Length: 69
Image 1 (cartoon, helix red, strand yellow):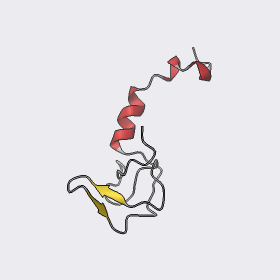
Image 2 (cartoon, one colour):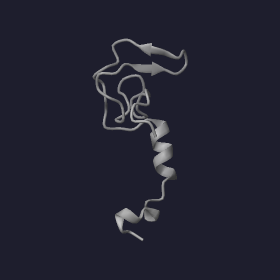
Image 3 (tube, helix red, strand yellow):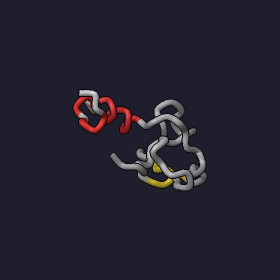
Image 4 (cartoon, one colour):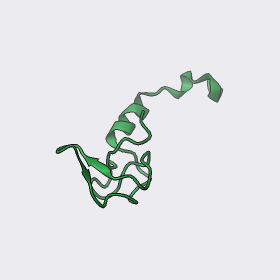
């Protein structure tokens, strides 16, 4: 999963960005594929839909480093 995905968060689309983005980066408008000027410094504590989907696919009980199995 990319750390700088360029997506807005699921909770406040077009207002806040995914928590996996760097604060100073502009986000991408995925309908036009252009950068959105002024979208820096809007990182939220919520993930975007891409990261939520991938996190939900992950089975942490299979991660031996966590010692849950």
